[in-house]
Image 1: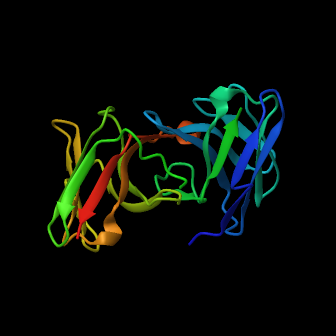
Image 2: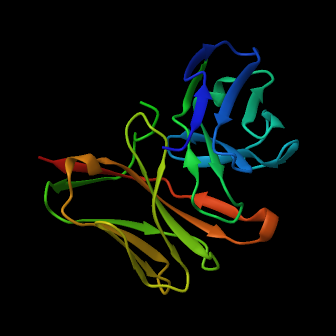
Length: 113
Length: 114
């Protein structure tokens, strides 16, 4: 299994509070991604990173920000969580941007009350 | 578990039978098609891929078929085992350099009967 660790794995929070999810990889892959997974929508890309301090938006980036200060860490922040952000969040890594072979973490289940 | 299998189409097969999971893709210009498997409580896992200039590709116990005429992708699993029970996603990617985009389908649940 690819060395990808997500934390926390489960979190319950209240509307309006900030939340940060962490993704840590030991594979030294350049590209890292945050996806959310919801019933009826499948996996949707939130943000991705193509290097340290280099990030870009995905298709559902509103309400989320990311940071990558080290190759191995990619943080996803919800500045002010809303109930619509209740979801399962997956981090993924890849060795190239134009590849369909992503390695996923185990997921972080976030519930916003 | 950390997967979202609710409200997905379900394919039920007998253990030992062959399974065929189908997917209709949307972009006729996609360059590359991929199948992922997601077991309950885990993240998606890459199974096999196929380039758009191919019709068929075989892996270990799995075969992917691509029909570009009708924009149809299928995953065949030979001698289905209980460990094959999972949600299966097809995905497609169009190469556009820095803006290459990987798009996932909504998934199909495979249930293997003992």
